[in-house]
Length: 94
Image 1 (cartoon, one colour):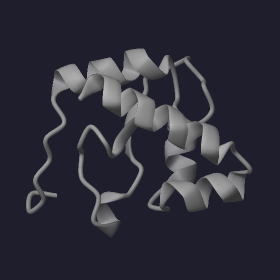
Image 2 (cartoon, rainbow, N blue to C red; image 1 turned 180 degrees about the vertical axis):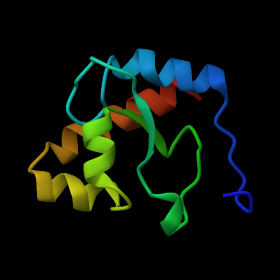
Image 3 (cartoon, rainbow, N blue to C red; image 1 turned 135 degrees about the vertical axis):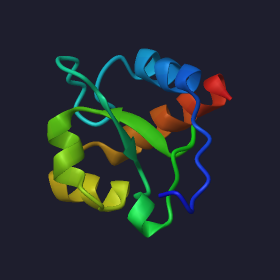
Image 4 (cartoon, rainbow, N blue to C red; image 1 turned 90 degrees about the vertical axis):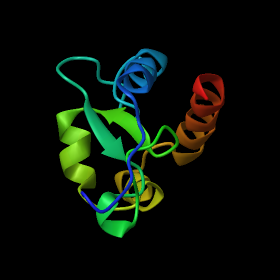
């Protein structure tokens, strides 16, 4: 991770948590949310505003290092609604 440039600020992370109002994937708002990279670091992703969403422990562990759309299809989650919401949030916070 030290070789990759990450630019997500604490303020941006707080704004992402507030904008999503819970886990970006399942909506759970109980417990501490974790930073999840939609494109995992192991696949070239970075901690950036456009790549990070808040995730509950369960979703983050389940997704592991899968790319977000592949994982969402496997879990039968609403991929389109997630992606539209993610773009709206990033545009608002940028």
